[in-house]
Image (cartoon, rainbow, N blue to C red; front, side):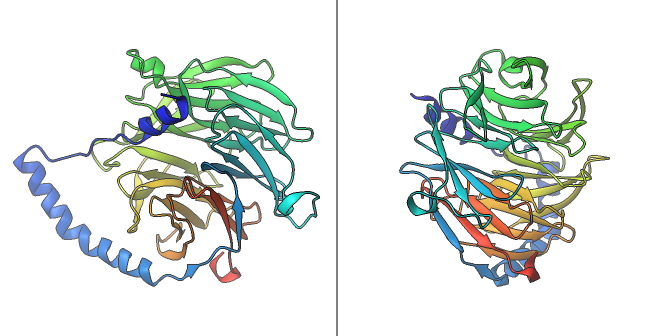
Amino acid sequence: MNRPALLTLALLCGPSLFPTSATAIQTQTLARQTVQPQAAQTQATQTQAPELRPSRSLPVSAVYAGALAFSPDGRWLVTGGGEGLIQWWPVGGQSVEGQSGRGPSLRQPGAVTALAFSPDGSRLAAISGDGSVRVWAVQDRALLLTLDPETYYVTALAFSPDGLMLATAGGDNSAQASAANSVKLWNLASGRVQGSLRGHGDVVTSLAFSPDGKTLASGSRDRTVRLWDVAGRLPLRTLGGTLGGHADYVSAVAFSPDGAALASGSWDGTARLWNVQDGRLQRELRAPGGPVEAVAFSPDGQRLLTGAQDGRARLWNAQSGAPIAVLGGHSDGVKALAFSPDGRTAAAAGGRDRRALLWSLPASLR
């Protein structure tokens, strides 16, 4: 089985939680009595939220559209496809030569499953289906580094805010779970691992640095989100678990721009907002869409985008949890999400529908 197929299988497994005692059943029944009316109201409101049609459709791949990222200057959207193609698309008003308004491109081995720009926009990191991470120079698309995490597949990456470090996570189905489920911190000047973070009980699926770079968040198939002290390489706290946490594996994490809140998305069909300071759950967002596979905050932190398996992205008020709009158009699940740096455009990659869609967000919804 090839690595992209193995990665897909690895991320599609997640046991559900069931009550195992009379007390647990009684507690769950009481929770249903108090929570379900509120959930029903949320779903009813969600169906009344306006549905926006995409303003642009980009043919990312002949196979699979699994990754995207806006450049920090807002001029480009970069997408990654199942055949290893990384494509630049002009979105900031500049004109380009070539076919269908495409910009530059490059190709790497295997499917591209995640992309991230360095904060200054000079480098682009990409997960490759051959089990490596490649770092490219944006100006001339020269290969700068090939990082080998020594895992069979890589699931997540994130640049530190100062651009000096790259965090990666992956898995290899090793019997040594602590090693297989670790997060590696790379020094980008040397291309070497400068530290590892261990503690998750299953594969780490998602990573995000806090805006000040002091904290790293990791989401895992063990249903938890962990916060780490980057400098000390030490765990700070675990969000979730059996009490108040996700009921299935965590697929996405994102910090708010001010670093005060953390959003997590899960295959339990919810997105959750956490207080970073004390680890408390602030809000649960649920909509009829199945597993939540991607989350993203708007640049001002007032809005949250969630992407679900039903092919829709949903825009929420990050403060109140009220649904604002539904972004439709994909025929497969949303695999990646991003806001443009000015917050006026949202983008989503649609997996097997092989496209990336862009929505222009009206001022009233921003």
